[in-house]
Length: 193
Length: 251
Image (cartoon, rainbow over all chains, first blue to last red; front, side, top):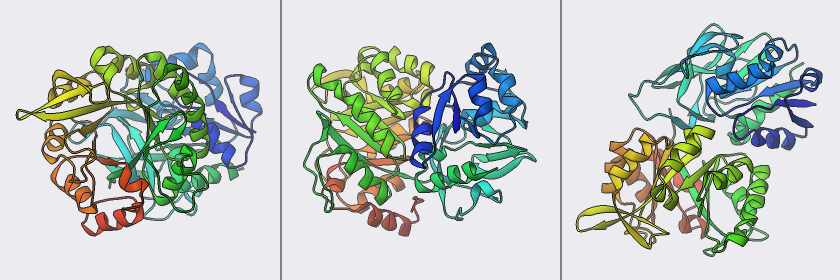
């Protein structure tokens, strides 16, 4: 069973649809017991950092997420909330990844919307990922590259497209919206034991 | 390197695609989901569904269709047409659309742009601008191009950006349906003025037209309908062509 953490973020349904297309059972929930019991947890999100953190704290989900032992995948805002701090709303985040989230400088079009390449994709999350493959991004804030970065993207500047620390994985791009390439990445995550 | 996006647009009426679609190998060419899946296979980067259903009663079918599309396709899609309130937008986004496009309602009540952006994020809000050249000025039209407004395209795009739109979908009414190419001047002017992505729309007739709009303007994406529906320009061939012109596309 895959648990998708329910909070005040948009379009969680597409993550559920993608997991179900891969043949896995899946539940959208903010119930601690259900989250802890799941084989895999996905922490998705599209939205604003400070209101999302506030929502998680009110329901004590911040402590629950940090303490999870099974494979966890943060997506987009999920990745940013797993970092130490976000400039968006001057927000202290969960601190699973030791890096800060900053707003893109406006030297090119922001948000970064569309399909882009990745570099340094050694993690098993990217098994089968070709060097010309692209994934779909949509974001105005980025996580700075750090020791936990497992894939980089270069738009305006190089940033963390994916990170890993222990059982925590995260992608800034949307695997659930990245066609077959994204499906493979999700499938790789769902295979992790 | 960020890729230029190619976006087929599907007109939806009462839950089915219209404008005549001529795809070989589709069981039902009028089925929006079937056509959407075909475009995904061909390498479309995103899809836009424009609901042109006339009556409010029949529009209720739309959220059901959006749910079905969201279950079946694995690339981003936008839904537009007749979204008049934050509640309308909410229903579409909750049904699984990645973005909503707002046109007339944004002119009537510009705060709708900021309200949707505040609730779901700027990336969810596409400001659709229909524009027509009149006495040397690109004026904004609403109600599906029937009603003129005093707004100028560049100013309105800037206001949309300021209010939190994440993208501009710019359609030139002078070019739409002509197959004579995109309106390069207004697309260049709008895309130079704003710092959010601009999707060029209206007038695509040849592969060179797509190359022109990407080489001569700052447009991030180009949208077309009939040339894709009738198979005049298959998306894989278009992308190969653009790649040969050194335009970054996803293949």
